[in-house]
Image 1 (cartoon, rainbow, N blue to C red):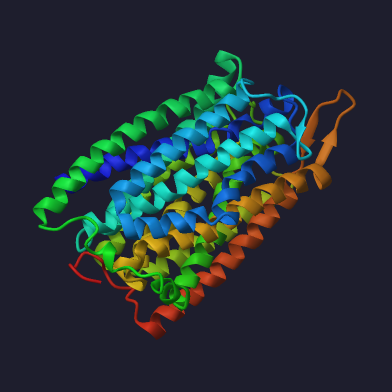
Image 2 (image 1 turned 45 degrees about the horizontal axis):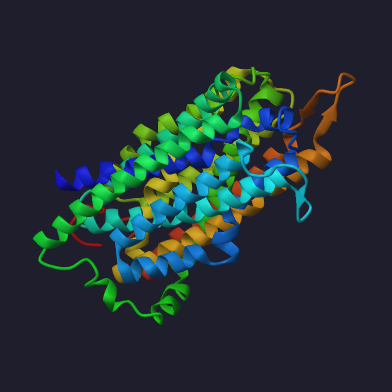
Amino acid sequence: MARWTALGIVSFTMMAAYFMTDVMSPLKGMLEGVERWSSADYGLFTSAYGWFNVFLLLLFLGGLLLDKKGVRFTGMLAATVMVIGASVKYLALAKILPVEGTVLGVKAQVAFASVGFALFAVGAEIAGVTVTKTIVKWFKGHEMALAMGLQVAVARVGTAIALIFANPLATLFGGVSYAVLFGLTLLAIGLLTFFIYTLLDKKFDRQAGKIETSSEDEFKLSDVKLVLTNHGFWLIALLCVLFYSCVFPFLKYATDLMVNKFAVDEKWAGLIPGLLPFGTILLTPLFGSIYDKKGKGATIMIVGALMLVGIHALFAAPGISSWVYALSLMVALGVAFSLVPSAMWPSVPKIIPEKQLGTAYSLIFWVQNIGLMVVPYLIGVVLDRFCKAVSDEGSISYDYTIPMLIFTALAVLSLFVAIMLKREDKRSGYGLENPNANGKF
């Protein structure tokens, strides 16, 4: 019972983080209409998620800190950084910080909001690594894939709430900053809940007759080399960046896609992509449970990547504007979005020793952040330069064919890497096709 209680507590913190990550996604039209942002401005802001994590290596350093200091210290630090970053983002959008003029050639409001988002992302990504290692700590030899699936499912409730309700909230209160303020409140509560988790974790260690850092003290910087020279690690990292670059950046533009291609009213356009996380709430734990009991992790990842190729190709198909068609594809995307993570994250402990997991997960997240930084900005620039149309009345519309073809190409690459991972598993004997819930890896 204690394991599931701990899981529920840390999952709420991640749910708050996911809400703040995606709260701006349904507000692209409002940002363009009210705040005078361009698609390139929005793409730059979205790409800021990876700035500090990638260029300053803060995510990697967070992983080293996790392996040295443990989940309690690192988790509290990450939750605090999330609150600070989200506060800066809110102050920029609420125009409490200066919004006139430019900063390094970027609109001041965009620049400050982006810096806040980048700082928040440092905390969010380190929190994600910490929570993942926390689950390994509490569930190793038990229902680990199921636990990871449940955590992801609860976290994605935050995404769903953001996609569905951010626009109505901003419309009701008269500004995008109010939706961000709601997310900031959730993060503050999440910080408190993680503090409660640290008390449970201390009790867990006392009952196990150890201190939290006993295994972490064995970690050495030289172990980084062992992670970086592991072929399986790199295949998992490449699959992660390619797969998530097809999903998270897509969700940043999915609401705008619904408006421009499928003629859904902007106020409720977030409802269709907002349904995607609800499907994963059931399916990710289900697929995780299958992996725990039956195995076939590498195969599950291949099926999910193959589905992603077909879904994005169908979104790119011209001449189809039915919202029912879009809804059907979004449901299918929810299945694919559940398959790959349900097997990918529990597979890492089969490839990497536990004392190196913090570093390994942080490096995987670091590689993932490169995609989360580059792809959204690329899509924003492509929309502005090649897909933008202005009517005689001055209204702006976008053709999303080229962006969806970009997502399709990334999905094809993810399928190729998933196949290579299965071959590497056969060669190296990681056991990715074996069940998890047997008390050992």
